[in-house]
Amino acid sequence: MIRYIFFPLMSIAFGLIASACPIDSAGGAFQKGMSLSAEGKYAEAIEVFRSRHADTLLANVSHLMGLAYSGLNDFENASACLRRACAVDSLNTSYRYQYALFLARSGSVEEAKSMYVQILSSDSTYLPAYFQLGIIFNEQKQYEKARDCFSSILTLNSRDYLAYYYMGTTLIATGQKDSAIGYLQTTLRLNGGFVPAMNVLASVYYSQKEYPEALRLYQQASALRPSAADFHYKTGLCLHQLKQYQQAVINVKAAASLDTSEASYYAELGYCYYYLEQYDSSIQYSLKAIALDDDNLSYYSNLVLAYQKADSTERVIATFRKMIALYHTEDAADLYRQIGSLFSSRSQNTEAIEAYQKALALRPMAPEILLSLAALYHAQKQYAEAIAAYRQVLVVRPNFLQLLLNIGECYQLSKNVAAAHKSYEEFLRLTASDPTAKETRNWVKNRLEHFEK
Figure 1 (cartoon, rainbow, N blue to C red):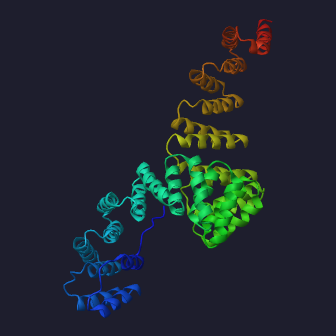
Figure 2 (figure 1 turned 135 degrees about the horizontal axis):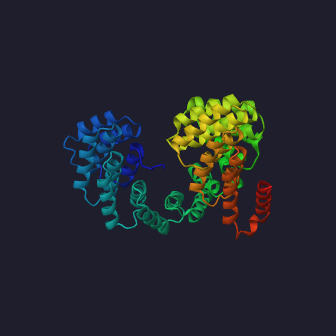
Figure 3 (figure 1 turned 90 degrees about the vertical axis):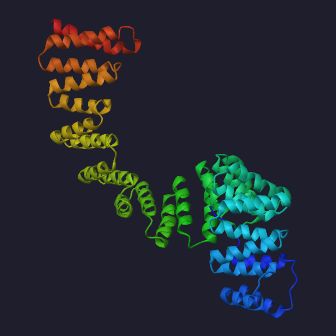
């Protein structure tokens, strides 16, 4: 989130305008010091102030010296001078505000926050203090207090576009996206070129699947900041969602040309080319994404899809193996199952069984893996192993009664007629009150009659 603070040059200008202290007899030197500060020549300005105002007891001189030291990032001297100015002229709100700004920027946020509260207790209309206090609360995730600050600003000044913007962002942070939209829209009505509001509002529309509205805002942001790669990328994401894949490719390529180190840009190109059925290009860009970020599993998933379309089973299996190294324990089980399925489709049954067994080692009672292994054993005429695997599935899914028929068939094919008969009878008994099993039950009865003959 953007944090808006006054930098030294702005602070000096503000301090000069607000200062009510008269210029002393050394006015020429005083004016020269101010001029040097305005030019960013802080060290020279300090020397001028010191040479003509050695005691620095005048509040305005001490204040300006403090701002000059702040410009040099000299915390100790800046703090001493700004604090002394506040002590000499304790009623000067500008001095206290500038000191609070300095403290916040220097990391003394709690002290700055306390000063802003003091300022507002003495002047409840001092808008800059509300704003900076709201920013601090926002960064500390005290969103209700932040909203109170920005709401106070809008009560006093209904044209403060930044207050509307921050009201919107705090509402988003607390999950109130619908309420945030109005504030962000008002921000853009008051300042049509404020890109941060375009970006945040577009992200809200995108999250709500209002892709045309998100696209419009991202395109505006891209036009205003053509060198910002991310806006081209987000424009591409919207076009992707609208199934305008060719236009998406153009925008995402523009992003990638501006930032060649961002893996997500190449991954998105991989996705778009996949939908365009240009699988070689999809593979090319997915591999580029992985080369930049080889820990992102989604990039491998897209690569697998492209390899499958390109009919490259060996590369699919190799990619699955890479993915397994990234997965945590149980999550890798499904990848082993998919490897098993691929080997099985190629009649590489030994390799398929090995893959299924590795999957079960990670997820011992996973019914989908057990079922795949059982079906493979069944097809290979390894009936005892198939029966054991089918029974394990029934332990996990006792209502999957169709497996009793598979078990019966395995017994029948292995010449164990009694066991087959018992399995079929068990199916009939357990489905007696199931009207949806009528056709299957008739088939089983016919098979049992065949046994008796």
